[in-house]
Length: 426
Image (cartoon, one colour):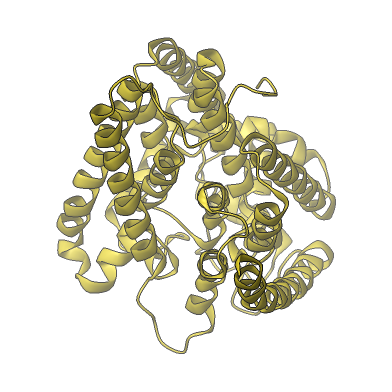
């Protein structure tokens, strides 16, 4: 009888794998078409879109040639127009801290096509490393690994990173390294990776919450010291006038409804959810009504997990969901971050993975396509799914805490394999 049940369950799973493979191949064809056009001509084949990599290329060239004008919009537009003559006077500027421009400066030494190809290779290598770490350190079995790879193959965010030349896989790699450093109790590495995430300032909040509420003081101090050093380096690179222009750009993003590449209707965070239902003039109140309890719950579960000594998969599902919900900017390419909570969700599943769990992971991966193909603006569903994942994970952590406190003579439990076993040092 158990064998018949497993055989029956494998029917939908096999069909779902075929569907996932087909979706992944369709996204790959789209990615190759856009990527090849950007490599050959400097811009994608569609008339109303540009390659995000142009902003990084402009930043890499300016930090080398004229660092004081790194955030001069006129200088950035001039470089981008040389790559794509279709660009109007309003395009997406380089909005990363100056030290990030210094890191990617070698890309500005190359012709644009080879610089774009180099970014693709960097992203591919980091994606392979992240998947390898997750499979190895979470001890995923063959069935779980297959679904993780298929979910990644169907993840529009991953494809979007490659066709746009974005940095979200670099963010994914840093957050993954940070997470495993925390799990392995390697505070120096945790502090290093937490500080380096400053190149994407809107995602720093949750890593700092993790360090503070798990009382990893050495890591928190190191992260703070490195943050000060990176800020000082940034001022030295572009000067006070350049830093002022950078903060003016950040102020624009924080106070404007849209523009300069900031379009909430294409986002998948709390901001997108709130601004869909509430006019922009009042949306910040609704946004805070979500942000404050989610941030408070994230603080609580990290403090609770520290007290129990657990390394809970639910904790990191909640942490990654919170990071994506709280950030004020979360575009389709940023949804590459769902790879990590997907891996933890698969780790919690019995073998074989239930088909409906795999279907959910694939659905989350392809849902962002709707905002591009729907004839009218559609409600953002990804933040709703992330909210449900966060709340469900908090509930499970609370249950684990109650069961642990009510069990006498039983030590702290863990729903993950030993995190320090066979752990490569970051």
